[in-house]
Image 1 (cartoon, one colour):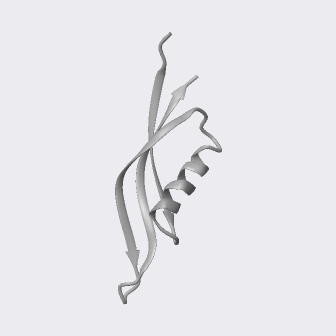
Image 2 (image 1 turned 90 degrees about the vertical axis):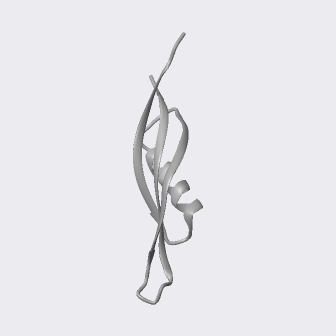
Length: 68
């Protein structure tokens, strides 16, 4: 038996850190996508205040899941 895996790209951000941005993004995707197999973070970015303080952490990631 063979399977088909689909990949979607999402962006997520957090005020806490990169790990939280990844976790919250996957949690949100899991509300509408079943059979998630994994994710590949392909970009990380921070947003800063004018003083240089990090205010938000952002990730772009590809999420793979098995198609029913």
